[in-house]
Image 1: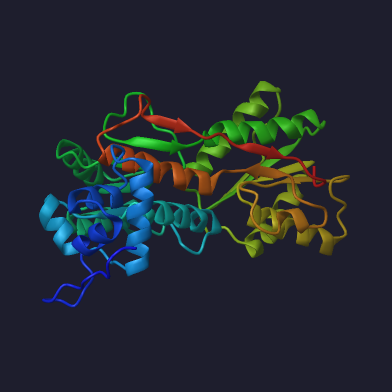
Image 2: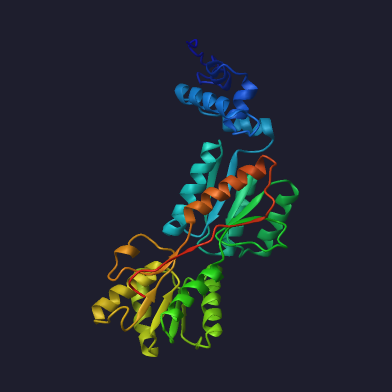
Length: 343
């Protein structure tokens, strides 16, 4: 039976030495175990973490930063937290990093590269251990900051898109938005649709990549690419209903919406208008958001691995911080066509 752990007399806090004593290891081993060091045996890691949990140990972030000359913070910049797509991503990144003893500094860019630049500049004063960014649409100043960070050994991981082979400044975890757009459009072509429209909102780079995939699939089938409706307003159910009514004037027989909330709004509007889906009009979405399977009819869409991307990006970041980078700079987690009754 272990001896009762002692609390630091100076601060009244449980210290790393107390955790090490409880686990029966040295303070150095305890520190490495809590950092998820790959050189520490799994049995020791489990024993140290159990001791830390039992004693309610809270690492001293300031002391860790001084000891390592770097922080235990990782910056994560996303376009929106209200968008479930990025909510899933943030939860996965934060949970994975927290288990390894890192804190996530979350910033919201509102899809504006200039706002991303300001946030990154502000967070750099905290000397983060690493940076995770959404996509690749950055200002020249942001790219310069990322290049400087890379030179200082601070890794950057981009998520939701795939980086090019010549991108030496960052790693990436995501999938091909273009391929996904081409795949769902190809499905509509295979179902015999010939006037396939694209409805895009927000118009961030990922939406435009989906539009490029839509266009490529139609060109390969020898079909018109003129039925596109691009609206810079944020994606929403209400906007989807409005876009459906606007597109109906061009007599499409199918519409690929760039996000499920738009497609959900279109399905509700079709129901209100007495438009039969998919008999008169096929409707497809993107992301497989909550509620899409419960629509009338259930929505065909593209399932994107948001949580898996967040988990993999966090694991990649931890590998880079530990000095064990993978062979490939780009991790493609793919996507899945979810074919339901709306097409």
